[in-house]
Image (cartoon, rainbow, N blue to C red; front, side, top):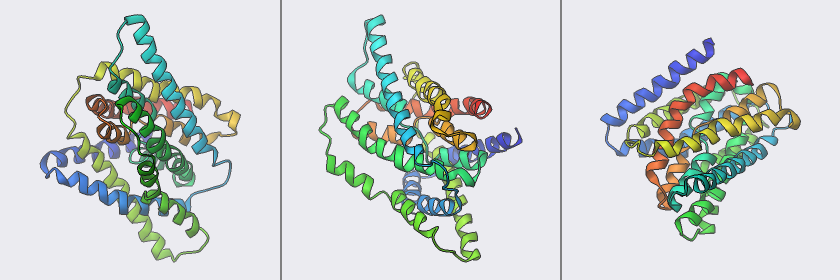
Length: 305
């Protein structure tokens, strides 16, 4: 309970500071901070935490479960849309359907998932979170997510642009570099400063979440968002989390996977919605409401798993 309270203080505190700064600073600051974290801070933290992580066990199961969670979220959201059409004789517009599907599929497993797992589970099992995010969520966001968005917007997806977005992602390259770095012994002083820089990047990522939340101002899609959040943050973690022992995943590793599955909708949802002219208001509402719901659901998952 002490760890959870400490996490809430740090999590809410840094996001709140970011929210205040987002209202005070020029609108270009969040974008530049996001670029810094994307190209510098994020890769440094990945290399540092991966260097100390435990890669033993069936760790490649993590991205496989990520794909299962994403496909299950999409399936349940599609069934929910069909259920609404059948019982209420109303069906959302295709752009809204696309945003509902994305919000039920894609979680904030990086900016939000990483600091929460580091705080609650520790660095030893951080590689499970990395594998889930980089080999699971990343490819799904810019692969399946883009394909679905193109379908529901009527746009034609450029497969080369999608592939390029994945291949040039610095996080993926730093992931590979981090694996190579594990083969050598780096000086203690280098390891010390690398660790400090990594934690600074984590703190900045929470500030960035607050800054971006300060720019989100609409709640009108909240009733529709409820279905996607229930699927993304409750049903999928509960269903797949209960099956993890069948895959040989138990203990802290299982806790990491469940927490990643239970993360609220990620910023990729908004980015893709904006790119393909889906329902941006719904995507925005999903981000804000999901972050609030997480404060309630987080202790539940820690208790259950």
